[in-house]
Length: 165
Image 1: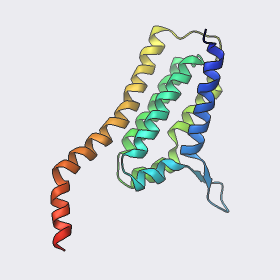
Image 2: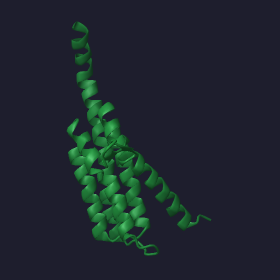
Image 3: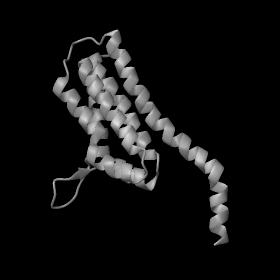
Image 4: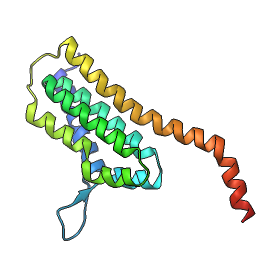
């Protein structure tokens, strides 16, 4: 039989590790500014950083449900995901924004501040969390679809143009 407290603990450990890695693993010397792999991956491999951040967002929404986070906090988490999806979709500028905004760090802090262990999520809580998960999944699918579309439609022309030079 699966121990629910143990699975929540593992999910929380995973979330802590992922958020640290993505949002504040590195510190700029002489400052308090921290950043993670999210903006680095986003600059080097457009779209891939959004995929990783989106996966983290899905996990955090699941953790919030398991920890009994109130609905208003779930909505704040969704707003953080939405801001990250919209601003993060801009090339280069979005990656710089990701380094500063850190939506997953914000959402993990919201969970820490508002968790109510032992409370049960309602159908409405699940519906709200599903909205957040849909946004997170869109943040994964849209960049990949755009990269695929532009790669298939404009990649051959770009390669031909570069070869002529």
